[in-house]
Image 1 (cartoon, rainbow, N blue to C red):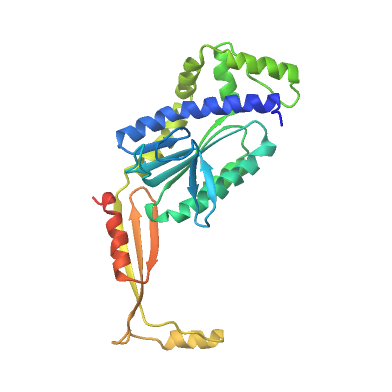
Image 2: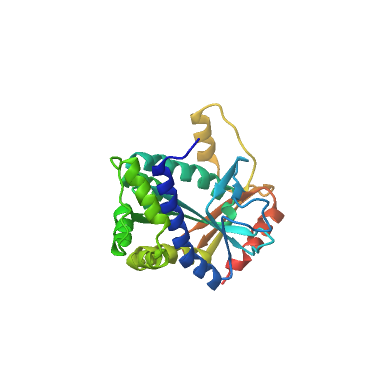
Length: 288
């Protein structure tokens, strides 16, 4: 099925925006010697797509993944998942926000022991409720509205404005104008410069996550055995009368939490002492 001219234009703008945003993130990753994986060839992958499996066993194609100890030949530990999206109309923004959430949240849950950064870089038109939805789910958001992108192109004499009333003929002219533009590099730099505050805020949050250190750790050993009751009153009576831990009580599980200085945290439950110790050792890179 042939793509509409509007869809082609949207892809051109979206791909341009994605390429623009690689620069500041790649610079940060180079600073901290972490691997920045983007769509394209990589010996460690069999395809150009970046695919990660979530906690439910479902695969998702992603835009940017940052890995600790990753190399072109080896997949590392995921410490950041960043999705990019371009949407021209508000009617599509809510669905896209839900799509992003539906992909990243279960992947982040699978790798929660690494407290990965969750980020979205959005351009075009996104409604406040769709942005709020992502924010409430712990996403860091960089949003550059459609008008700002149009204004930057306009500054260099390139008109890319279109809406639902733009004819197919006009859209074709804009597509050709975009494809034949010889100053895209200058426009890209101008887009970064004119949105420096927003970009610095997002990259700053990402940097805090990459260089985070342990603030404190808590360990809660749970003793005893599970008691089951058929009524609320029976359970209440048991709790009321329960006093000190019996001398012969055995460990049931260990609740271990790590709190980081960037505000993130990891909470895990282990049935086995060695598993709890192994978990703590795997986070040694975050120790002061």
